[in-house]
Length: 316
Image 1 (cartoon, rainbow, N blue to C red):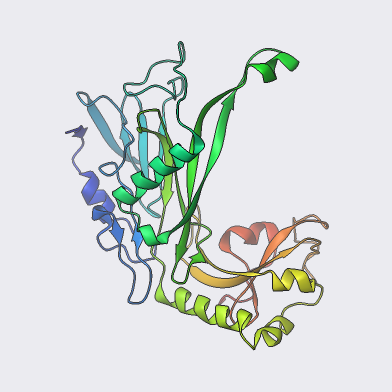
Image 2 (cartoon, rainbow, N blue to C red):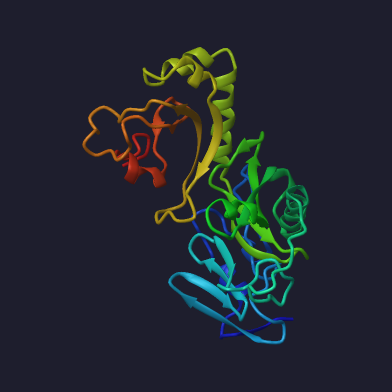
């Protein structure tokens, strides 16, 4: 068992986490939703394959800047006490390819895992930890590369240092949940090198609105719904829209929000009428625009600074 210093326990701190969504059973991994909603998952050091330090050392548990941190000689496992997001990373200079205990960068071991193998291991890891299997709609790997040499010679000595496998979250009738995050980077032996997990509960209203939007955008009333949307969006873009669920990001400071929207890619966007002086979006851009079940355009909390206007569908 890892030795933890401090007058409070990790379980007690996790039990106190609340981001506006229901936080029941957070210390056990599951975040309960309201009736008809989708449960979330609270990651914790006890469920993680990330090892902050040697098993025989006394790791520090500290609380600062809104985070609970487990710190050891290998790295830090940090939990945001407001949102529940977990960020774990090794200390600088640690060889990311070696089994624990980590080695320094000299004499790096060859990375042996393929992208498919890494994806499978990360999938198994997070499901075993407590992420509901029916909420995983896919997984993809991003590659970490390193190189040396100068000019053209650098490309010849590039090598794969590893992968980060990212889970795609879906809920209800397979609606994508865009802001939920769970990714991990594993070493050759399946230990976590770094990870980021934010998987809040989704309230029943967001799921009900998503189902209603799905009916409106796929059934006989589709043309009527699309006719409510702003002029200037191409017919192809409107028809290719997708029903998704958005929620507050891990960095949002306000109360937790979740909403279902019909998302449309606008390839030649212009600032909304009257907001040109406020908008920071370039005149010719590609953005995703969000429309609720009434056809009202919405702004996500994380978008409002860049797009200039407050959410026209939110209560002021």
